[in-house]
Length: 75
Image 1 (cartoon, rainbow, N blue to C red):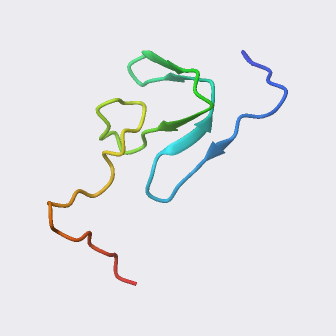
Image 2: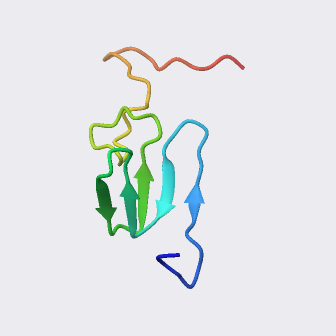
């Protein structure tokens, strides 16, 4: 293994959001490029809608028009 941290890396999965990873991190993308962040927690985009991919910029959130109330899911 390339890294042997004292504690395991914590990754938090959300139902409809990004993958939260305790940093610092290096993310190797499908094209072979590497994105690096030294932040203590990073949000990795899982929907691929982010303009800052692989980092999440909340593009996955449903958009609403000004004056329009957000739709609620049926319960």
